[in-house]
Image (cartoon, rainbow, N blue to C red; front, side, top):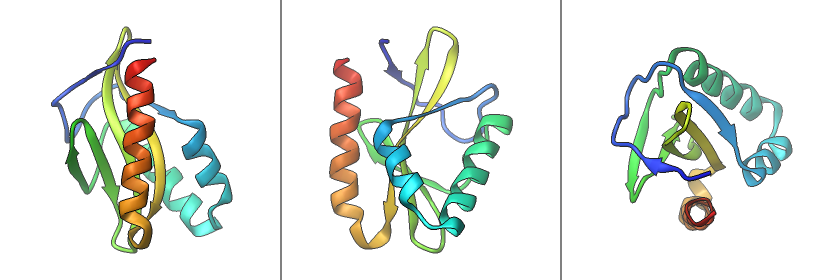
Length: 113
């Protein structure tokens, strides 16, 4: 599937949420509190199109932010059906540089694929 970046951020109607295998692995290995927080946020994105607090990291990559230091790295793209939110990877503030690099690698794989 060919994905193209979109400059639309904030609130988007009809957002489909997709998760990479790397995100799923991180999510499944996280503690209960983290899973609940992330699942609730992704549900809000999917149902209302509301991202909440996030930061653009450049080249299409952004991060959802929580006060606790929790981060979810993502891209918003267009596919043939509309807007697509792709959760690439999750992590915490303490491993942020490493996680951003890994998220960029996942993103490049998606763009090439």
